[in-house]
Length: 453
Image 1: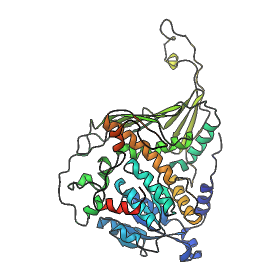
Image 2 (image 1 turned 90 degrees about the horizontal axis):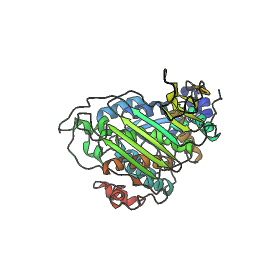
Image 3 (image 1 turned 180 degrees about the vertical axis):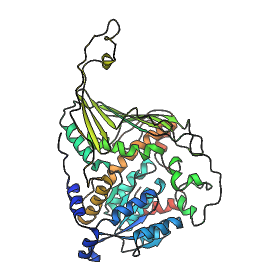
Image 4 (image 1 turned 30 degrees about the vertical axis):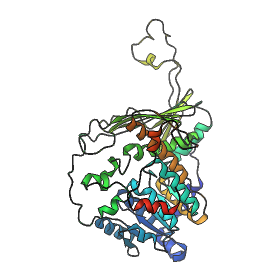
């Protein structure tokens, strides 16, 4: 079994955990600790506060949420020193804040990140980086224009199993990788039901929650958690889960964009008022290989486990916290079926070599190797050193683009060619027009004033 390679980030994380946050804070003065604000305190927002609160060189200095109960919960979690805001613009005006964590619904990620950069803040922004393709380039432009550190929440390439997988693929032991297979499955049948239009709950600023998104009547599903299944606010499981998996593919195989995407599916089975697909099968064509990605929401049988990288000499399987390398069989695996004596007439008989046990495997992630914590630690270190983070804005933009192209292909019902240099869809004016969505007033003018588009 190969020893998992160690990264500088993981070494820093180990040293950090070797000291308790309380004792280290007694050593560091207030001016030595980073003052971090949190925009959005939902499910992932709680995790972000917990992670950064444990960092010895961080003060959780502020929290913002448009829903009063969540704001109060966030302030309690951050501690008595934290300031509360119901409008993120007021938080950005706080000169003491050095960095912000954007943990809002997807439709706010880009504009909040750009505004934070313009306000002189470094940003950790949740995945997916964007709601539509063009926003990603705007974020990259803003980070460069205002000299800001922007870290994308595509953190899983920090995982030790991913680093080990990169060494395996680079060694050519598996031969040329020609196919990658991935599936994201669960069963939430029959769906989430229907929530009729109603008044927003007390304490929710629904107008500010909508922000640049189109004005629509409030329904419970269109807000808080279930926003993810509506096109106005998110991209379903494609941008939710596939962004993590495709980011690993990009990193491991040294690519940053597909050249063609075809996606099929729809909302066929779940009975509710949501919009994004419950079944989606996508073929991403990269130079020299394809990625087949399946999303299924009404059957949780794992027909494909982990991310499978297939080469002529073997297969690498990446799972959360583990990896396996399987040797390749010669011939046809149908020969292994009990009682089957080779192929029908005309085919080869007994041509396979029986498989051996996996070459190597790691069954669990070592302590101190949580990729989300490592990603945040890297961001904090980059705030101090001003180097670019491992998961930077360009990285988040490229993987989000692949996911958005899949959803555009599904909605248009045809394959889309992609020019990754020009970042356009050649020969398809209709699809190209969908690479950008208009912001609702007054946010369109706010964006225009920043001159990053």
